[in-house]
Structure formats: C-alpha cells, structure tokens
Image 1: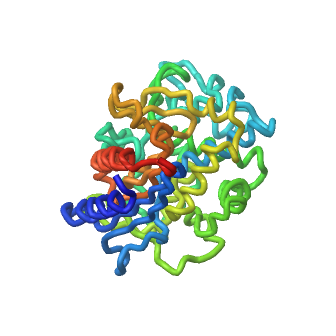
Image 2 (image 1 turned 120 degrees about the horizontal axis):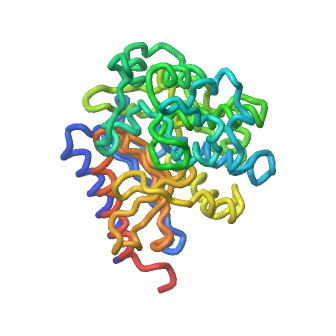
Length: 376
C-alpha cells in the first residue's frame, strides 16, 4: 500500500471514530516510522471551543509513570540508587509507619524500588487508572465508601501533596499481598517513587522532570499542573478530557495533583514522540537498564507491566503486533512496535474509551504494516 493511501484511510478512520461515538469530542494520533519514511500528525474533532489541532497540548494521564520510571532508571545508571534498594533508605519513618501491614505482619521494610516500579509492592490503589474506568477492573473503596478520586472531584480546588495521598491510603485502604507476591496497579506506589526522586535529587519532582527530561529533549510545552507551567506557553488551549459526559479542564482542577508522579503531565504528541524515541533508542538509559525496565508481569488480560512501561499483547499468535510504552486512562497512548517499526502517540480524551482505543491502535498497526518500507 502507498503511504498517501494509508494516511488517507487512517485519517478517515480517526474522524469516523469521533463522529460515530457521542462520548468522543476530539482525537489525536501521531504515526511515525523511520523505515517507512512516515510521520503523520493528525487531529480531529472539537476541543475547548476550537477545531482540534495536531500541535495542541493534552492530558497524558498515566503516561507520566514512564517519565517517573525513566528518571529512576537514569539515577540508577548514574549510581545514585539501585532498583533493589529498600524504599526505607529514601523515605521518612513517619511516612512509612503503617504503610504495608497484613494480618499483623509489617512488610514495609521488604518493599524495594523495583516493587514500586513494577506494581508488585502489594500497595492498594484507589484512582481510576487502576479501577473500573480502566479496562473494567475494580475501583477500590475506602472504609468510608469513597475512593480518593471521589474526594478529588468533590473538592476540585484542593491541591494534594504526594505525602497526603499516602496518608489517605494508610488511613482508608489495606495492602493486598506481601511485596513481590503478585502484580496490582498502585497509584500510591508511584507517588512514593516521586518522593524518592525528590530525596535523591534534592529538588521537587516537577523540577526533576524539567531537568532530566523536558529541558534536554526540548519538550517546551510539557508541564505538571498545578505544580509547574510550560517553558513556552502554547498558542492553543489544553484539550479537555472527559469522564463519560463530564468535562475536565486539567488546568482548572487542582485536585488532579493527587496523581502527581503517577501521571499528571500535559504534553503534545510531538513531544511525547520525542521522549519515547529517545527512550527506545537508548539516549536516556543504558541498554542493560532498558532491558530491566522490560521485565514483564501480567497486569490485566493482554497487558503486561514492566518498570513504568506497559506491553500490549493482544493475542499470543499476533506477536508482531506486541507494542510497548505508556497508556493513560484518558485513552492516551505512547507506544512503539519494534516488529513493524512504528510509533503511535495520541489520545481520545475519554476515560470510557480505553478498550476501544486499543482496538483502534491494533487496526492502525495492521494498516501501517502494509505500507512498504522505504527503498523497496
């Protein structure tokens, strides 16, 4: 298939997805393949009162976990920490007190950095990226019947510090298993990683994001609201995302700060592509460390988790469509498929569309696989 034909078909399919689904308002899709000489940056729909534009910033949700894990990996490469270090070496006794106790046994001292990175710590989760809005898995309720996400929406103007989310979890939730015994998605584990980054670098997490990633990769429109602003303000408004019919403007909801190191950044598709390619090509971490980040554990059906990165594994006999990178519960995606040599970056800005977005991406991979590589 010729590249122009494939691009036209993909653009039509993206437009149809938004037009045919009343829950979708906008969609963004960047497709890049060096071997096929392809770089398409597409957008469709209406957002923030304007036509969606390819260069528009949007909420990347849990893709931010890949930023966090990459900074931890860079610190490991630099000898400033080790994946097997106990988290007690970096966090205060008061924060760790009562963190992980099951049936009277305290497992807190057994938690290693790698457990937080791979969601194998056993710590609980009460945010929607691991709950019913994400692949229909269970959203944990506290002893009072509310999730932390409920409280965030009830008090949208509140700014949550990472330590406050940990204390909330300690008061309202229970761990699930001893560290290393299983795999269970935990937003709180990533806020702990953000605090470890702060301990090692002696700077706030948002400043570490800028120093390690945003500035060297010239991600000038990327930021962590409400903790930071972009280096260069975009001429376009940040695209809102939706929870079913509820519109969320990330810049106007400070309570989303509870996600913090677990996924709270705003980025453009081009800047996420720049980051992911740098990670894939070994410009950020060593090859050995990147291999460690890709030690997969089964998280959900068809989705495995490494150290801050996910692998989509649709069916065992479709191995050529296995892709890895980051996913966000706003139906954001940042994936690389090594077999086909293609990056897929973008979002559908709708929490309830995650399953359908993955199916859309698989169809996109099939289409791109039919485009002849350059020189053939």
